[in-house]
Length: 163
Ligand SMILES: [Zn+2]
Image 1 (tube, protein in one colour):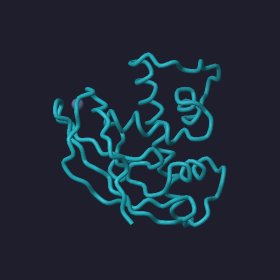
Image 2: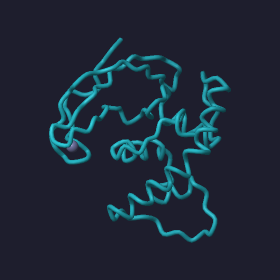
Image 3: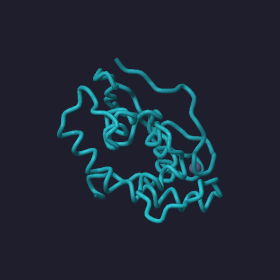
Image 4: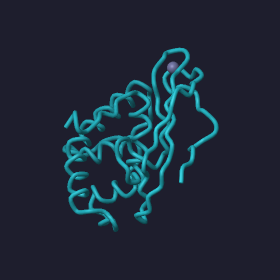
């Protein structure tokens, strides 16, 4: 089964100009139940700044097939996801240990640059996860909430080459 995520095209996140569809690719989305669904991700180019963007549904993380929520719950040890191999969970945790401080630093500089409201810090030694939570909120769903701002500014680094 294939489906296109959205019929409407959002404006360019960098300059708000019109995006043009220049291609697409298929991706597997593994739902929390373990079900696999094929989706089509469109490749878009801004007609003004020429940047390339990929349409990614909010519940997915770039380069990963499992839902953001499943990955989030696994990396913070909240739940052992069903239907996910232990080696995959181990890989997610390794990735997150390296990625979290990087993401926290990106979000902090974005918060500064765009004048976001940030929870004031009291603790001296904060974990990377806590620093992320200060900016996007500590409640469940924070992984999905950090994807969009990082991707939009082209700060989401491919983990295999970066870490
Ligand atoms: Zn643009």
